[in-house]
Length: 305
Image (cartoon, rainbow, N blue to C red; front, side, top):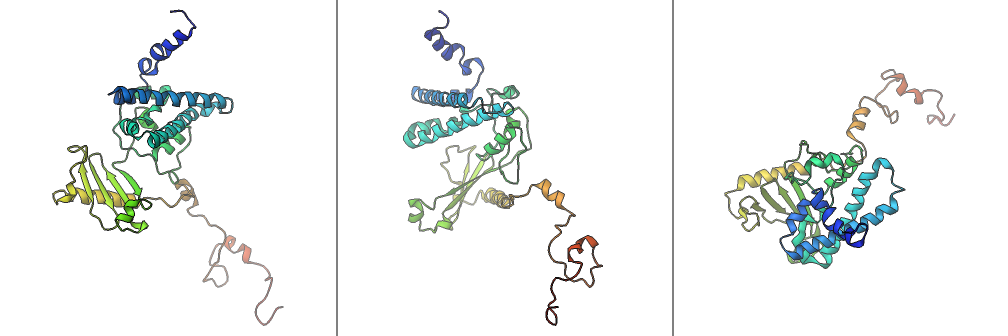
């Protein structure tokens, strides 16, 4: 085959330099969706659109992105186009989206050599979509502000490590704006669902006075048999409700100060406010009454002096 010809470049792109065949990148989505020609072509076209758009965007930004965050920036660009394609596919080709499912986001990979140890492998750790924000911060070399970002970084898993990880995941769904809320006669505040999954048992709790639903994904992966209809699994239901309560008590409101900031504040004074229950000020440190000493600007007894 003659070199530097369109035919050679086509051959290199499909066979010789194909990341799936040469570097074993993207093996999870490749193996998972190639059960039919339709799924394979759909994933191939999605990958082609994502990589083409990503390469175009990166080529426009390559002189703007600093060298220190070049690789994380590339991952964010690719992930952004993956999300766009996923939403478009879900909206306009729902049948193909249902067939490809979770494997569309797996087009994104960590191209750094430190992630080579996990190429072509799978991980059964319980992850949530909110973990992506923490992963991007960690990949960029920053410290994850866990008082603001609830997710956990996936970088240790990508590098073959086994971090201290969560034992259950939570999913929330608000259907207050759907026709189902009206059909059930619910107020918008009660149209909420919570899912708890511990790796085997999946329980769904619905506000509004409905009973929970429970499925054993080990014995019933398609979720056909609701175990909560009987009392045989009441222990599992109570345990999962305990996990839901634990999640409900998480720190989710304090987003202005980190743990380190709060520890540094201990023992210090803000040097403002009032000092009640004192006779002459000698009861406290002089520095606390410094701004209160000296001649009074105005007297409010027996008229102004």
